[in-house]
Length: 111
Image (cartoon, rainbow, N blue to C red):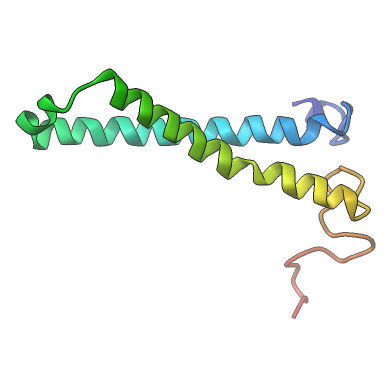
């Protein structure tokens, strides 16, 4: 939101850019994964009510929640790697992913 309000220029310190992206994408992944886990649990509860009833436990829920957090945060950690690798290679930390003077990735005419 800060970037959109500032005419698409990042007004905050450069180090906060990957942190903001990490928080944005990890919240999306976490929401999707928790909804998928809830849906799977409800499906299994309807399809196999007796078998699922015996397997209840707070420890299983905590283990699954921890696994979902690790999966989502591990997957979104690529944001830090990509951002800081780009900065080390001469990028400005902004939104120009095409490199120094490049014509962009995947444009029409890049054959």
